[in-house]
Image (cartoon, rainbow, N blue to C red; front, side, top):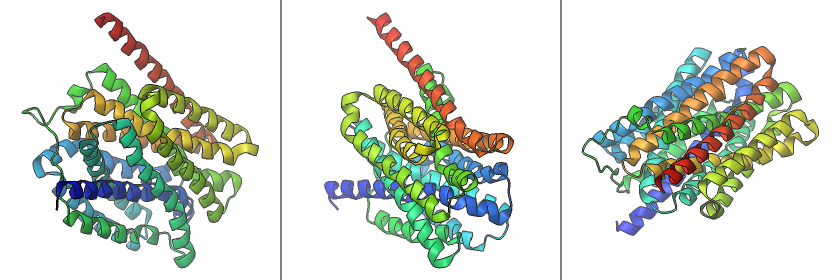
Length: 391
């Protein structure tokens, strides 16, 4: 296969991975209310499904730089596909909540493998205008997020079994496996002799530390809505599964449109201003949604538009700061966002919801975004101060 054809195939694989990840990420919003009722668990117990999922993902993303350097991108990716097939198939046998917890932990580790693979491919192939191209890459995550609730409702309607929403995803894994057999995967970029840059060494740079915290906060806000909106709709507004899917689809549709628009405008607006403006818009929308029931559906959907742009654009800021050793930087960005999702988007909201109800839990998303805005302003002030000192 010639170089140009292989490049196109690799980009296709990266995009399809993101579609698959979007489908998987959208399932909890649809399925969690069913799981809560079937296993009779509390909000905190329910949150442990995503906590273990995220822990598994963090583990892989945190050591991904070492694994990629030692085994190469293709072996790393194929291993993830193989274990994903086994784990997804095992969902059919779930009959206890503790078994489901274990499977979600293993599923998270394999999804961590896939997201690192996709982001590494993208970071190597998209060397120019990274903000633009990373948003395009994440558009396909948004497409998967739109498809996911519709797919879940169809499976539930046809088979009346939530477990099959995971089992049937094996078909998608097989497609990725076949495509990868015909591809020559790019080599990970490493300019230094010691390819395993110490992540903790990177965090000594205050600029990277600030960006890492911003990633955590934005991921926490996004996952609070994505994973808990279905529970909120069911508990507070008594919505059916079909109605919940409509809300999730509208959120994810505008989520996808947001990333598509960012693809065209992010380089003109600038990464920093784009993230700041979208953070303010997201915080404003969620506050309106929670405290004005008349415009609830509109506000949650519009929030999807704003918050969608933040993650890939923040990643682009980080990639531009450290162009060398991209596999380690990809791992750092994904691990930090995973920690934010684990602590802020799952554990903390489950704890707050048990104490004050799911509405209080959802309010935490606005708090996360407010803190993110503060850190962005601090980042800008320090960056401008350094420029003045150098001049």
